[in-house]
Amino acid sequence: MVFSLFRRKNKDKGRQAQRPEKPVVGDPGGPALAVVEREGGSPTDSIEARREAARLTEEKINRIESEMISATVTRPASSVADLLAPTTVAPVPVAVVAPPTRPVTDWFEGSSVGALGHPSAVLAIDINASSLPGALEEAAILFANGQPDPAAASLRQALAEADLGSFQQLAWLMLLDLHQSTGDKPAFEALALDYAARFESSPPAWVDAEAGDAGTDPRQAASSVALPARLDDTIASRVDVIERGIERRREITIDAGPVQSVDAAGAARLLALLRRVEKLPGRHVLTIRGSRRLFEAAQAAIEPGRRDDSDACWMLALFALRLLGDVQAFEDLGIEYCVTFEVSPPSWEPLPASIRPVPAAGDAGPAGGAAEVSGSPPAEPNAFVLAGEISGRMEQEMQALRSFAAGRSDVVVDCRPLRRIEFVAAGELLNEVVNLRSAGKQVLFAEPNRLVYALMLVMGIQELAEVRRRKI
Image 1 (cartoon, helix red, strand yellow):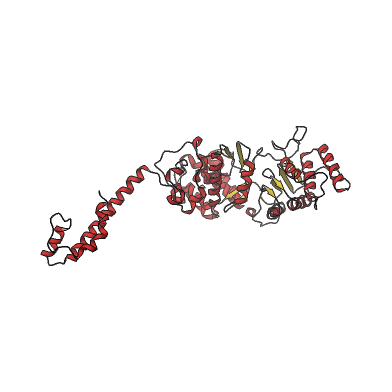
Image 2 (cartoon, one colour; image 1 turned 45 degrees about the horizontal axis):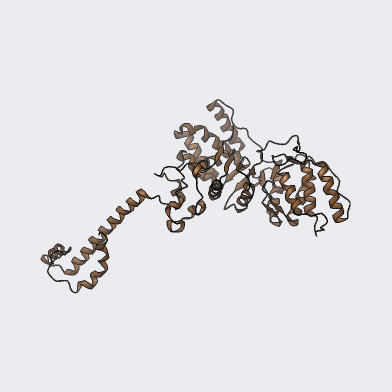
């Protein structure tokens, strides 16, 4: 009934010529017209007055209706601010997270109800506002977006002025991790002394990030690189990153766990890198994880008796058996190689000091025993590795993560080598966590640094996955 008044509004123009000069009984605008006539005004003025009154009334009704709708229907987030703002809708338990109708990353790009579909389609995912103090949220986001100096200033001001309550220690650790990430050892050591006095406990230890030229920015050399699901010629850029890391650091890790397939070009690229590293002195170390997966992918690309144009996949499979320490399987495959290519079989050689395999849950040899390697650094078993600094849509990393998660009910992501993840990339990661949870998988992020941990709290990732905090 209310809207019938405004449906007649477009008919007013046709009625103006027929409207009587005297007010008609029952006409809503009659009194206003009478006043205008008594004061010497014109009927046109009264029509404009009624139109203005009608417009104001319509705006008021629309506002009331909008408030009523907002009280009963949850509006899908259309921006980052909407995602981070407090919501009145009760949180949905993690156990009942349903698959979204559209990736969460679309919410960061100004989507609307029309784009996402019915609002109920997104009710299954509820990201609450972070419990972090505002200063820590600001520092986490600034650092994520590549602004370490403003992030440090925000943290120092918060430690000096703000009442951080139970987050006091986290703020100290965030600032220590920031100094570590930027390579500011004097600032780190000074703050570490203050930390020890403040909390009467040992602070985190400084970790030397450089092994090369003085003045090299440690942020530009990755400490760990995950190989993609498909090893082909496109891994050239990753091989370059690994080589730079070997030059600048004493140790770098390759994670072959995500590898699903190999072609000759990719095998040749990786073999060339491995052979160069073999010649390096022992103070440069290439740690390789997921050797069993690397062997299986290379083995699937070869066939005894089929002489391919390149023997790169054969040689990569043989190298992977060296990583696994499986002499018998190496000799058997060597004989098949000899028969196929009509050449002498390769001979077994122990690994040099510059290459160290890390045994993982899937690296057991045919006899059931994992290769024992002395001096290997501890590693999160059977985990996907995020390392270095990640930005943008991180398409390769997400593809590798999906391949790694296939067939697994528990997905462990090792975040210890991860120094920084950009805000947009964190949105992509959140989207992938939603997809994994929707597929019934449990997700664990292992020991991110405190700046990444704080960003995960800001994004709400901890509501969908377990985040294991780093020990001091």
